[in-house]
Length: 292
Image: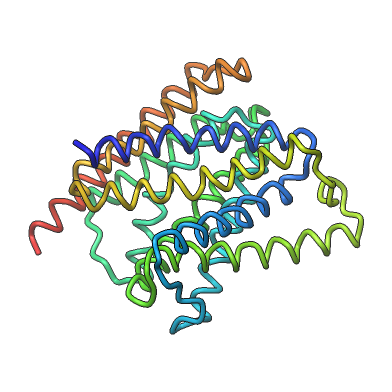
């Protein structure tokens, strides 16, 4: 039961972070909000390591892949925080949940995993669900609707690299390394866009409230990740995987009560297709795991 509780808590926390990012994004550049996530996530990770007396591996083997991993999670965060600036949170998260379909494709391409016709069909259904939400040509979301897909693609690459690098450093070290490289890359990008006076990407000195919310974003990012890790140490993946979709439930509730957003009928159809295909892919992966 503790594993389910930890996972559920994490899934309800993440949309809170997204809601804060959406709120901040109305006055602070999304690039700066994304940077704050990694800066303060790193602060929390180092603090926890010190409190627990854990050593951190800051110069691991395969350093280049660790930097690339940091780049992918930084890009995923930037894409998503830019998306929620204009999109309803529930819609953005629902579109982002094509990530298991993208991960399936990338696993087949880069890891040589066998993917049968049923899983390929589920991938196709998931993307059809995303089209129901984005509705290209209908002028509903425009190019902003593609940002969560970009985030999902980057996150899928991040997960593949995390899988490859899991034996090179501890969980706390991986979180700290991701925060360091994410901060370095986004910080460099923000410096460049500020120097070039790129509209919507110029550094803004945050006030006390904005800075406090940035700290909360970093804390939630660290806390949610930590809860997911704890969950997987206490319950099998087959039990926890369906709980990922609680994130859409929480996002819908937050979007309605905080921002007055409520998905329309077409969006609900898209959400149903994406969730259904994601659950089916998880089911087939579990069966494939048993077969081996």
